[in-house]
Length: 205
Image (cartoon, rainbow, N blue to C red; front, side, top):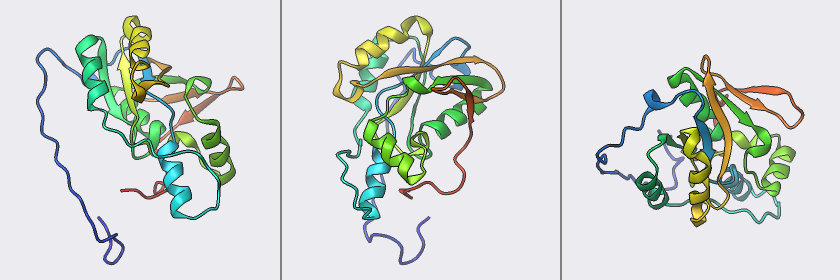
């Protein structure tokens, strides 16, 4: 909902209409212990780019929004790999909130390796300066895949052949648990990731 006199005068609504391919059964029910968690590229680029431009922070950054149509790369992966269990875009609330939602619905624990999450150094440094966690910044061209361990490495290799997946990485693993998202940090500790608290910055939707 947009408050009166707070819109930008142009509103665009979109509707996606499609079909479910025969033999494909993605969903929370398919996720199991041992599956690998994959992201198709660097996180936080979109949210930080929009924020610095809107707020005129005067920061010289070379980042740009990662807005992209993902149907092509996803369609190619679905054609080749039958070990894909679930796919989700990491938009509002960023990577952390999206994974927490999936963990809650599956009642599984997700263990992420902080050093494996692809992050531009510029995004990391500016976010740190502004007191923001890149894992909670919005993305518009990034999606999470949960994949059978036996196909994960090959799927990442295939992703990297596409410009929209050139920075793809395996960032974690699914384990039996209670719906927690655990980030194993650079320093060897464990940090629990929860839902984003408060309104997302910048407010995009």
